[in-house]
Length: 392
Image 1 (cartoon, rainbow, N blue to C red):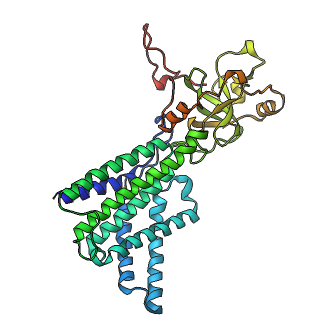
Image 2 (tube, rainbow, N blue to C red):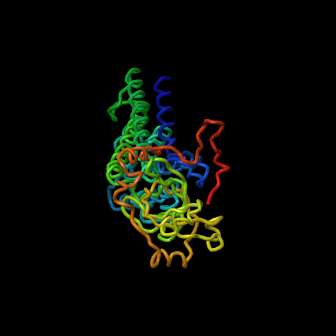
Image 3 (cartoon, rainbow, N blue to C red):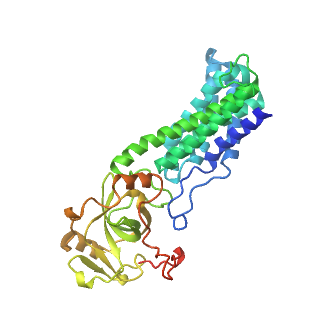
């Protein structure tokens, strides 16, 4: 009974990334709904059943003789065709149209499943429920890792997920060992139940290790140069921000306070984007540093008149929230030719939001400093609700 419960826990752990695995953005309400697929485990289960049916004749016939070889090759090709929709289902929208990548991943999935089945064919491969569970566990681990690679934007969030799975593997491993089981059974002599439990456990370990490696590979450059341009932050519709577009982004100030502001995209770099911020505060007394923007010229982009700050600001890729529209041609020509666009003053120090503790905090899907949209909760004031915020 204890071994059965351990197997159920491991199956749930393997199935969870198929349903979710999408990291939530900082502002959940203001971004499009994340990509979830509640029916993914059932779809993978059906695909695993078909793959198991196709692989059993391959192991029974073997690559003996020309006729059997062609039959086995045809069955393996059919396995790839079955694996392809499963791979496409867990891929993000931006990759679903990449047929070559989806096909390559389907071939990789079939190779891993075939390798596991070949190792266990003598003890478990020919039994219906046990063989189906092995194919499902292996497929779920591989597909869950693909989903973590595609959707795992914030590296420390991915690492935390990997640690949770590793802790679960340690607990269930101790549980299995305490009940007299083994994590490295002999396929020729072990019972199907023992082999099945070992496959579930090793699939969980593989998923945890793959997530940890993915997090480490992304964390190092993140802490050195900032969030990368790829993959796209969770929840954004169009990516990357095109030059000349207006986006809402979290603009960090020198005092570490940050606030949502419309920004005009000027240039991409590997670690950040150079932008000009837009404010609704009257800057008529500082015309040499600001450019007047009239809402009538920015239909569908700005709701009221504003001022364009001509001092360039640097914004990490993870701080972009959503796109408003394109800059009018007349204003863009002014910015490129006549406006006094200038770099940030050297004496002002490094650009805010790019020190090590800023990068470390952003890797956790957080932000250093105080949200400047909130009013201090003293002297009769209160925190402003998000749905009443006034926007440019």
